[in-house]
Length: 466
Image (cartoon, rainbow, N blue to C red):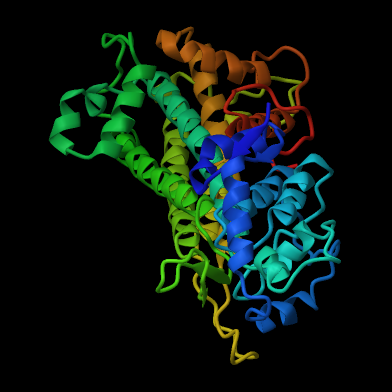
């Protein structure tokens, strides 16, 4: 299949997924070609030069990293896709033939782009890596600046995060529901009557998701009149995650279709298209990094609540778990050791949730404010990885609690439980096992599921961000 783009409305999250994860090529439609041809004709032959951009690019050595790793190949594809949004409208003044070259890069191998490559007010440095293989010897005045300037990286980072965040939230809801079943928590905190009483669409969505997973759960075997706070407030906490994920999705959808070239050509006083050049701050994305910051904080809060549930489950009085799950010959200290690991993940998630704010630059009086989007993206990734670690521990402890007490969860949760046990089988005291390695594989599988949307076992040693 091929994604055909004609207008900025074609730059959606659905098409981003097709191009970036599905590897589909992009073709420029007839309407896009006409708009670009008209825009290029109106572009001044000696338009404003991007002195700031040109100065930055001199320091960008394509292929060289900055010591912080590299973006996933899918995200690099996403940057190329987002770059085209500014071009197809004609407002960037770039010829259709040049835009076709950008689209053609999607059909070749992706170059390595440093994860910490954004160290200036715009995105010229990472874009120099993304477009290192583009033919430039015949670019006209202003076209190189239009290609290197703007904020397509921020759009791609937001879109990549939005897609994985939605999946991560869905899987977290399932694991939290499994924990509710394993603990035998009363079902009152998830009652349908609360939907209207709370009056918040995001919290209602969380309540409804938990009820879907708990459909058919019996009330006779509930062990307590009142569960710990971590079980009672989980709909509120998940509701906040719903809210932040929706905000990232909105930021991604807005960013993908934005015209962010440093110089844009708009209609003049006579109504002629692309008759007037406007130099603005389009290279700064003001919606992506605040949304990523909020999501990191939501992941950290959810990790803390999940860790509290691990602690609640890790007692013989509440779940039926034996004091020492590690039978003779089994390496590790059972699920109690995982409780300590969960606490460590929570602390790391909280550290990663420190917001990335606008950094000032004192060395250059012109480029005096830098952009924090790459930093916010790195922090969200780390907070999400830590959450995956806590959720993996909560999942395996819940599975073990159900196993040792001979119980089955509600029917909708049995597929989730089967996935967990396919990666981390219950500890039954037979044979030797490296529990730490098994737990690591489960964490990796959850990370991979956030990208794919499907709960499937991860390959040993393979990271979700490889």
